[in-house]
Image (cartoon, rainbow, N blue to C red):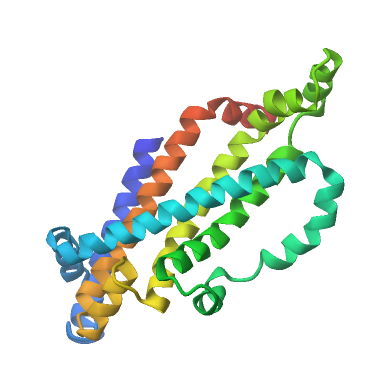
Amino acid sequence: MTGARLLRGAAGAAGFFVVGELVIRYGIGDDMDFPPPSTILLETGRLLADPDFLAGVGATLANWALGLLIAICVAVPLGVLLGSLPPVERAIRPVLEFLRPIPSVAIIPLAILLIPVDEMMKVSVIVYASLWPILINTLYGMHDVDPVAKESLRSFGFGPLAVLSRVSVPSAAPFMATGVRIAAGIALVLAVSAELVAGGVAGIGVYVIQAGSGNRMDLMMAATVWAGLFGVAANLVLMAGERRLFHWHRMRTGAQS
């Protein structure tokens, strides 16, 4: 099944490549307007030997990883706390529901004004954007814990902390992992977006701006392709980790469905 899915994906990508090549070369103008996919792929490979681009990749991924890590360290304990204390969650839930729909990109100008340090501003925006999917999924996971399992442990004399560590957190862990996987993609989007808006010394977004100022559409698109590939790679790695660590959860949900 996985092999067939990969073949279908490869066929779709190849078809898109061929159609885009034909349309751009023979349909909407010359290469100066928009480079064909073959040119973009060529420049995508050449960027691997570009030290400026590689430095930008390092800067972007460093901010991405730091922001995502901070978001995990904040959102998971907060979600566990709120999920364990329903009255507190009900009191705070209106604030969460008000803040959560605010587009994270929209707070970048405000962050620029409030946080003068460039890297700190970018990491703060990433943390804000990544916080919500991890927090909400952690809350859902805490609500999904089997009450019979908790009551069984209490009947053997275990206290609240033991029930939390032995039942609630392990049961909610797959939901937390899903939240982290979703947040990883969002964090990468915000990392590049913050660089596009705020600029800076290095970063994929900074490289895109510089390529655009030089009228190098091919380099702009090639850098964008790499940003997308990094997002796909992060998602695949985290999905593989979920399947390996939480296969029991997949079996349980499959049996329930």
